[in-house]
Image 1 (tube, helix red, strand yellow):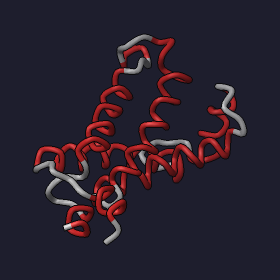
Image 2 (cartoon, rainbow, N blue to C red):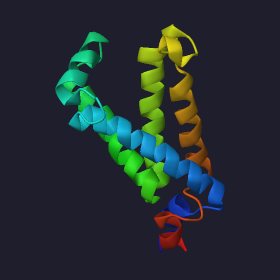
Image 3 (spheres, rainbow, N blue to C red):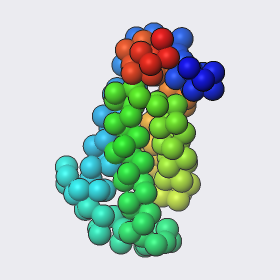
Length: 144
């Protein structure tokens, strides 16, 4: 196997990062489902696109598609542990944009639509980026 691909998939992490990766992935998939499909009380692409336009993120529909896809498919990659590091990078970028464009002006706490929750998810994504997918992952099986 190519050494670059093997280093991308390699992980020394144990079961703890596996649990973190799966739980964070489920949360991302749920949020992506809201944006893409209107599930779980979400507004779908049209409604999310209109909201993003109101924030100055244009074109709103494309931004909704990109963020929803990053969340849903990035979350799916985390849940199954396949290409977890690249998925983490995409999610980190998406979270930084969300924090800086939506939440930062509201302070830390979620009660005020602050960045508390996004910051926690950012920490989980950064941990996966540094540590890899963990012991129970497709990445580890492929690199093994």
